[in-house]
Image (cartoon, rainbow, N blue to C red):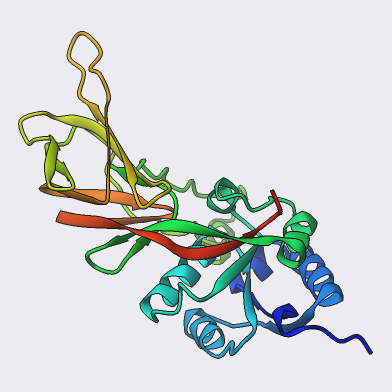
Length: 278
C-alpha cells in the first residue's frame, strides 16, 4: 500500500459547474491527483457545500477543480475566514481559465494536475476592497459590455401551431445575463495613496488596476481623447480610491456595482498559489 507524507494529503474539491462542463477533464484530474498523492475527493452540490468542504480541510492542501469563478470564490472564502495567508492553494482549470492561466497555471488538465503534485508555492499580492472583496488579477472600470444571449431558433412545423407552441415551451431558455451598460466616458476622481491622478473635470475612457509585486498596485488611466490622442496616465501605490457618479467595475470574472466610492488596498504576499517550478 502506498504511503504519503502529510504534505501530500490533498483535498480535491470539484466545482459543480466543472462536472457539467467537462466530465472527462474532471475524471483525468482525479486520476492524476489520486495516483500521485493521498487525495480526498469532494463533490459539493452548491456554494454552501463547497464552503463547508473547504472549511473542514484540516491539514490537507486544497485543490480546486473548476473555472475562474471557482478560483475567485475559494480565495474569497479563505480571505474572509482569515485563513488565506497560511494556505497554499492549487487549481486544475476546467472551463473558463483565462484568469488562472494569467497567474501561471497550465491550461491543460494533465499539466495542471502535475503542477499540483510537483510544483512550488509562489506568494502573490492581492487587492482587497473596503467591502472585503478581492481582486486576483485585474480590475477594470467600466466593465466590458456583456453580449446578450441569442435564443435558439425554433424548428418550423407548418400547419401545427400547437406543436410550435409546445416546442417553445420545452426548448431550453438562454440564461439571463446581468444587464451591463455599454462602457462610455466617466467622470471619476482617482486617488493613489491619497494623491489625485485624475479629477472629476477630466472624463476618462478606462481605468485598470493590477496588483503587482512588492506591495504596489499599477494604475493605468486612459483619459477621453478629443482630437489628438490623450496620453495615458500611469501610477503605482498601495491604496487606490475611485469615486464619482455611480460606476460599475469588473474584478477578475465578476461585475460589481454600481457604487459611488470604493477603495482597494494591496495585501502584499497575501496568498500562495502552487505553480510549475520555474
